[in-house]
Length: 192
Image (cartoon, rainbow, N blue to C red; front, top):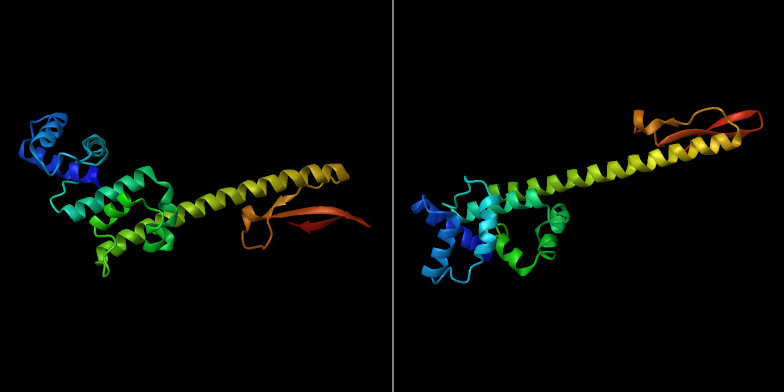
């Protein structure tokens, strides 16, 4: 939170004195503003570069929420995976500083506005999509390994038929690979 406090002060200073170099503005604020003297200006300078200029913090709560959203989307911290499980579950994974930042952004109020609910829903959806993509990627990798295994197994059995990757064409079939096995009267279909 200290970095965002410094960033808000820095953005306001730069708004009042637009020709001032950013680093000079940070030093000036640290020396002249007792409330900002202990703020994290090193991180604030990094945030200043990461966050687009239109996050001006004229409305500090909305600006903080927007800035936090940009940082989460850009950096995807490890605790993002908790978004689909709700606010309380995510809160248990955050550091005290992170939790304070979320609270200061109005994201943990008892009766959230529609805008806050949309913010939460957007990140929950983003993480569900990312999780689904990862599961799909893992599933396809497993299917490819099964297909390769079946090719080797069929060759060892002397069966010239090729296994079929059914899930690639019809994911509702109930099985992934259609292969063969030895039967009394020649190869027979088998599903995996």
